[in-house]
Length: 151
Image (tube, rainbow, N blue to C red; front, side, top):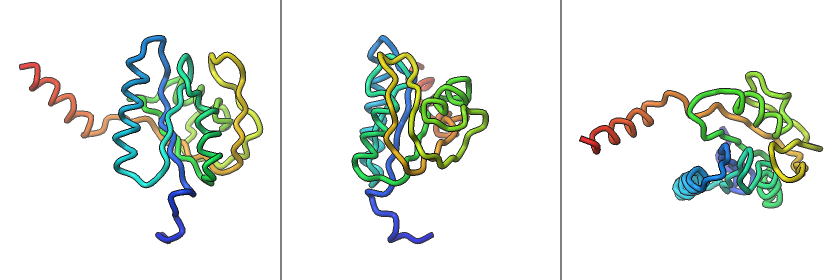
């Protein structure tokens, strides 16, 4: 690994949430992004699949305007499902889903999900799409804390 070739401006991070008519999901994702920004050198944005702004394409475009060449997209979902395997990859323009883990793709168009209008992704770099959070021991620690605090 060449450490001095990865400047802050080359890589961006997009945390993706589902979106809701209620504010709580957006608030939590915004807070997680703020916490994560303090722990990383990369620019970090949030985007929502539907109902909330910013949309995924808008956030990709914002990172693109910062000049990033690679965007790591992480769905902030616990488990894989239709949204993480099909809907979000389709919005990103990545092969319509199905076990998408890492893709490099030139983005000419994208279909946003339940937004007022289709938004175009204007990013021609690489998108790396990660798995959702999954059964991570750190999440079990959070559960343990919740249970202990309830006792």
